[in-house]
Image (cartoon, rainbow, N blue to C red):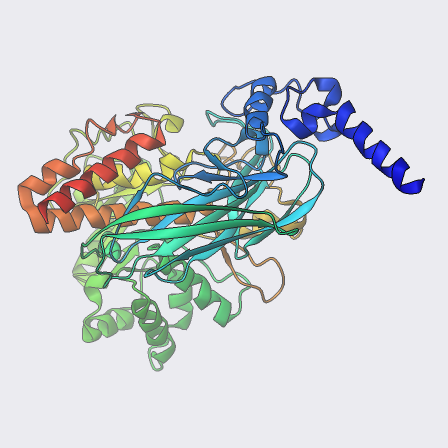
Length: 557
């Protein structure tokens, strides 16, 4: 009798809510509570929830709907943590398929994203994601966490939650409307001899159900050197131990971001005992660093030490006035640069500044934003003796703009993924010799002690005068440890920048190997962008251009 009652109740549930189990059309009255809260909303693209629900239910429109499906997306989109917002390829359990091939080169990392999408009304459950590629290096799976940015103030797409921190785990627990999102990385060895490798992806629910698919990678043999085009950011030790500080620097460098740690170098410099200074420089060099910075007015004995070691060409020193208006540039920066050239010849001065009239007198390196009113990259020519770098800060001052800041690519958490990578393409194309992002971790203190509990970015509306505005993630590209003594965590933005740096290394390798013919292949204008404020906003445009370039190389082999 008891068993019969249980079977009756189960049958009644199936008949009373067929849309939840058979992939039919749901009405708002049938929605679970979490979905009811979204019923009259739109996603970041502006799509009504009713259409999101229709698309989502189509994934489960089978005689026996699965409890979840797996999603696949390229590495150039930000996948929001709402399962109804997912756009990409979808694979059901026990229905293996092969994705469109990705393209990679020897000595690079190929990456893609995997999403776990439980059906509407599914019970809370745990899932794992595993990746393996025969012939490649060990795959790494990162779970993407999202941060609460609060109300949007400047982005073109609005979401309260944006993906950015990466946790080294292949597991997630999902409930409600949450999607589990993972970044999967597969390194291609420098000595890889084949022309193709296949990444096998398995998404498994704790009860044993699995979705499996393959991601083929077409591999082209090229000798790339990603750190020859310096991407740098200022870092500080903060409260990290020496071990964790060095691990943070190694993490940045493994993703081709070179940490400028002038404060740490200055603290370790002792004329009579330079070992600590030298040890840190050698550690960073061993991990791939090619460029270092010093604070303004360095010790003359340090200058002599650098000359003796043959390191002078690898060091730069910042000027005395940051982002100076023209009067202060003349009053402070020109005398400082003159004194440095007299007393410490060969140690170059760098400065974030507008292109002032006497620019060459006041700095050896000019750093400028793409939106600067005095800098049109299509026509600007640096004065003789001045090197051009690009600078991404998002709130520079003492300048004017020739176009809205938000219409050029930038590095904020709530910028599109495409922007981070495209910014590097633009800087390289327009002749910048390096790119500086203002900070790798200096704004950690502003995150607050309870950041990992709330994952909420600072709620203060504006930066203090003379600065202004709200700038999500402007001061960090890595995240502080989740617990005392833990590891510094990379960000999704850092990984996208890594891909952009490898793109530039590919372009340079092609120029070296194929000359003018190769230069025609890699030209990004007009295919990808026209100028910094007018570019194709579809990620597939950049990815298809990159694939076409590598196809040309393969045909020429």
